[in-house]
Image (cartoon, rainbow, N blue to C red; front, side):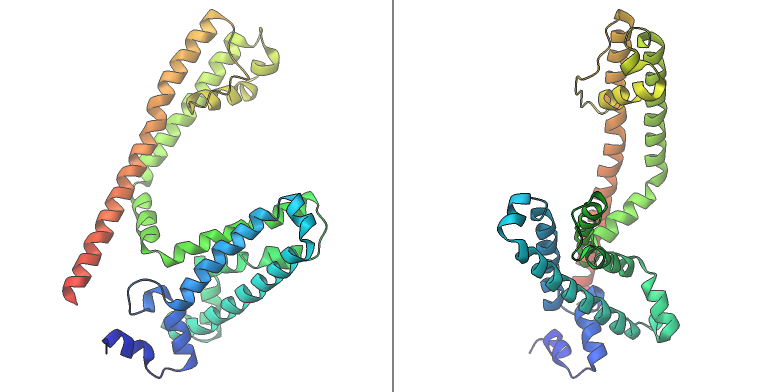
Length: 269
């Protein structure tokens, strides 16, 4: 028998078995444990359910289905949250009452709780704007999939290491946004006060131009304004590509380190 099978099949206490199956780093085999695999599928289903529920015709055809399905998801996620809270005691950092409170302040524990709270608040409520907003927060459940992937943590670490370069690029883009908005306000403000009558109004045009979206709902009409618009568009191509290149390099480095770590672990085995 595979040693990993013997380890998983050993006679552990309930808390040890829960920790083994719910904590991704504790699972001795490659991939997800059966419990976490089921949870991942349930997360995707819950997000899909939240998306489909926004369609009024579907709610009208099956008014009870969404209520019962959401109640079942709430029950399963609440049970999972309590199980994770109980199993966290296997980690020496989270033992005892104070340890559990410390665990509840960790990032993934907060994400787990946020996946439950909107359903508790919106259960049986009316279709108001606030209620729709709270229901949309259920889509945050998709972020829970991040705990099951080591690649996400590696990428987050890589982005953190490149934070200085990203801040510089975003800062340069922000300065160009303000500068181009101020120039168009000066040149076009008199001709088109509704669109360029102030720097905040002109900022919408700058965002659409610098991101190369170009909606076309607001355009300069003067010769100087069009020249400035062309300069802004050309500058936007380079500034948008700059953080994209930094992120692409960070992702590549992170995945390369993760692959090297996996290969070293396989050689040790």
